[in-house]
Image 1 (tube, rainbow, N blue to C red):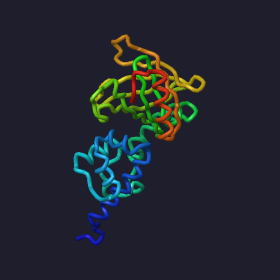
Image 2 (image 1 turned 90 degrees about the vertical axis):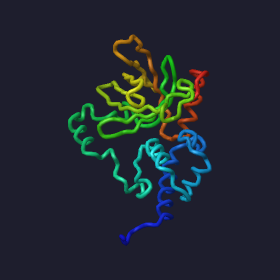
Image 3 (image 1 turned 120 degrees about the vertical axis):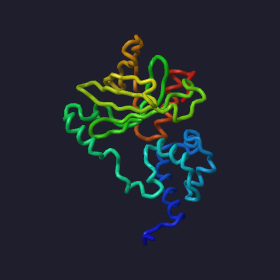
Image 4 (image 1 turned 45 degrees about the vertical axis):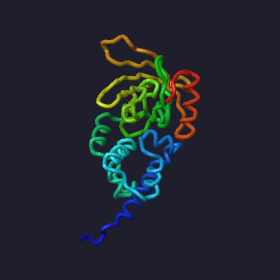
Length: 233
């Protein structure tokens, strides 16, 4: 048996420590549990290092937090960042400096409230060397009864000149759309497109809400209520 074998107690403590760090990015444990579909009491046991999740629950948590199952075995700081993969370096070199990233002055990282003529929802932008990753959730009012995993949207954004081009999609390419936006004073405004054979182009506005999750989500709720009082995220 290897000399560095760790006990179940040590592994549970490792997982609990990693989970506490991941949960800090969310303003409410109760809301986080609802998004994950996990009982609050059971989630607290995970946080305290008293229990491991089942394999299917762990898979759900890893996909939600965008990490892999090594969070059970390894401190977060020791898990290599997927963003350092050689494919990213190759893409950065290919794109060159002209379109390698959405520069802070063009489209800075953080939370945004996206509003068009049909719906409003919150997006989060995370900077990489060659593009910006986008993640958000379709409002419950648009997909009533659907779990958070089904409502999740992801995408990428990159810039060319003064314009930001953003591709966003649900899982398996569902409800894909393209935003072409540019900064107008304190807002990002432009057009949203879906299928090219449909005449459904519509105006879209993104309002930056900052990088603090608690403040951003509170501001987003107020903004969404003001713009579309019939919708809630």
